[in-house]
Image (cartoon, rainbow, N blue to C red; front, side):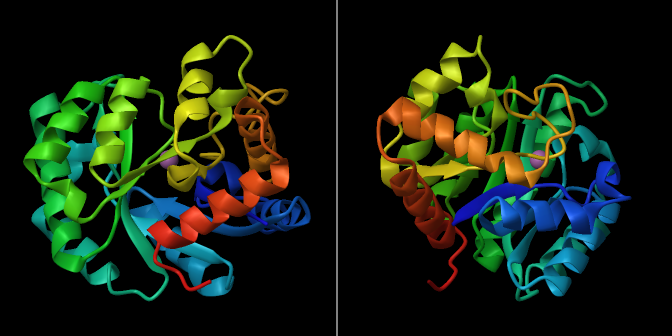
Length: 256
Ligand code: NI
């Protein structure tokens, strides 16, 4: 009974075998997934999956790497999509200082616009934070994002940053990196996150957990993330699975 809260089976890497991939995830105990769209093509596909499978939900947002491409029409389109019954969050949105396609100032503006939209349509937000922890926290504070709350996706920051996000009504989600042998920070952070604010994800096809590191990730592997966090927290796997699924349903406002 696992909930993969962040997956891109809508990515081109699954063009050939998305339905088989989804079936493998079901076999591995993944009962629900949130398919995240981040540009016009992946958003349309995310909605297709959500319309096709009753256990798949969708999130729609504009990725910070492509911030320069977002127009007012796109923002209006996101607002319309927010009314779709299977759309459970806006995102992913945020800041990405690793790639330099979009200047920081434009990324920040596009991020702020999406937070404001989320407040307007009353949906939680999914945050993509790459090498931008301080600026993310600052903008979340300035925009009073605690009103929507949401998810820090594939969290890679320190415990100190995590606490600031927890204070603003955010859940902290961990993926493959928590299983990497040389990754001490996500392990230390995951261990300390309160059980009622913890989520698991794969971010498939990216960031495959050990022992698949470097290969294509898929939602079935969220089990490996769950097992590792249960081990770090020294609790039974079943407890970790049950609690993270309940958390996911709470943040996405789904009935039990
Ligand atoms: Ni993602």
